[in-house]
Image 1 (cartoon, rainbow, N blue to C red):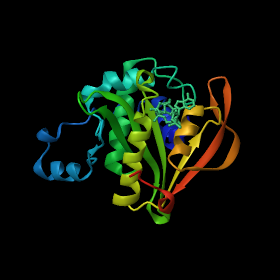
Image 2: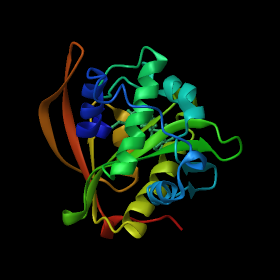
Image 3: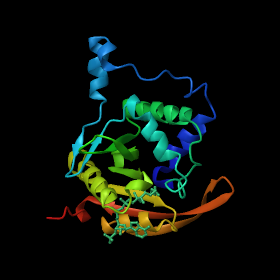
Image 4: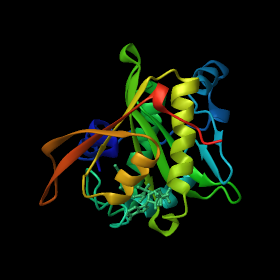
Length: 225
Ligand SMILES: CC(C)(COP(=O)(O)OP(=O)(O)OC[C@H]1O[C@@H](n2cnc3c(N)ncnc32)[C@H](O)[C@@H]1OP(=O)(O)O)[C@@H](O)C(=O)NCCC(=O)NCCS
């Protein structure tokens, strides 16, 4: 769920407010922008991060169907903080929100793509960015067809390494439904510690969900040899 807590809650709310987000045009390709605007936008682009099997990269308009497939899958969305998408328009609005977050510097969401085919199989996000206190939250989701092959671990190692080493964060937090065994195990394997439980924090459709709060400090983060 909550992986992407407040940010996702804001996104979910924005789907109900088409005048604010839904009406925004899709991003203009950089090639069609004036040189000044293109320079400004390129500063707001995400670095591509490579690992042995994956490429973490900016999500493009061409990825919308894959984005929809990921976020409309009830298995993937079982413990998320909003219901599965039901129409492609939700994926389009989601992409506009991803672009706005990157351009405004409020959240950084990478597409997780297979290295060989570049197909989008998931996303991972640094959000609730707080440079003053050197902390951020992390969220992640993978298409269920790609679970249990170590991709979650590989993608999170990559983005955590970037967060600590390139961006200077000192603490990364995660908010997980305590019943989400795969997510809890993934975090623990990465060295996150369970720091507490917040009761009845999310109301998703007819269900009330608790939050398990995990934290990982930069000095605890170990990249396996
Ligand atoms: C959480 C998620 C990203 C894990 O991705 P993944 O690629 O399947 O995870 P990995 O293969 O890297 O496995 C990481 C660890 O979790 C364990 N694990 C995976 N699925 C598990 C499950 N269902 N139950 C218990 N442990 C599980 C793996 O065995 C591995 O631990 P190990 O090496 O000690 O055996 C994936 O399940 C997912 O996208 N879930 C839906 C979205 C979601 O809930 N996101 C989190 C929101 S907080």
